[in-house]
Length: 261
Ligand code: NAP
Image 1: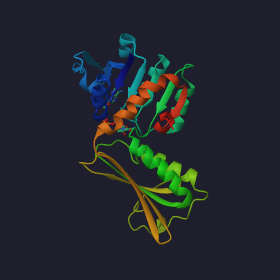
Image 2: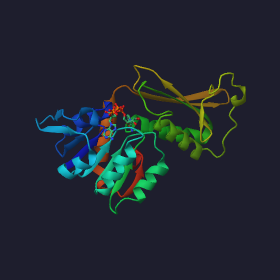
Image 3: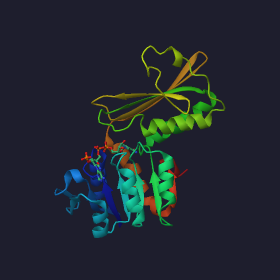
Image 4: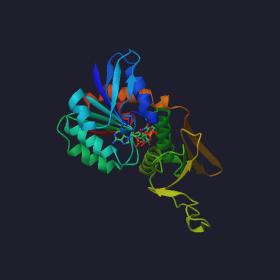
């Protein structure tokens, strides 16, 4: 049994993580940490009760988990990961809005043998979208990203859009001139520039997590689109990471690194 602690356990994704981990036979939720729900209880599908706790350090000392899963907030995740790594846990992080440089620093300061696994997107379809976008950029270097999320999202652009732009920039041999930046009538109309790739963020109630990568070439366009229509889309990736993080060490970024060829 893998003993799992979840931070952000009362959040939109965290609640889904509790339900999903709690239903597996080879792992169990031993700590649900979220100040918002302190005093309440999570009951897993086996009928086991786990009280929500407000404080991570106290929860770790009391419940001795092996893996932390964090879906919290860009302002909270670094502290949570630092606490968990220092206590010898491996970490699986989905929280976005923190630079990879910061995660690298956290992993470097961690005790030897611990692992920090970070995925900007745990949905397999989104991982494929990024892979296909990277491939397309070799042949069609002119690209823009449109990401669309629910209106409560804490960061813009999304972690997936940031990663997609990095992959496109790595893949193309030269950054094409982006037309139209100096023609903006309203500031920001041409998007934010991430590694030279225009990225446009849409925030609307009703959305979950969506992204379209558009490529333009002579007389043609190519669109690669992914839609998470439900947060359950992230769960197979989270389970895979919980099962595999114990065999990793240091910082590993991206679900693609855990998939079999
Ligand atoms: P959410 O609904 O706001 O949930 C976050 C929860 O964390 C809230 O209940 C919040 O409580 C709680 N929290 C805040 N500080 C905490 C702390 N120090 N310790 C424990 N819990 C704490 O957000 P969400 O939609 O679930 O998203 C969470 C993060 O995951 C975001 O960064 C989002 O971008 C990311 N995400 C990643 C993926 C992926 O595949 N990588 C997919 C979806 C979302 P309060 O509201 O009281 O602060």
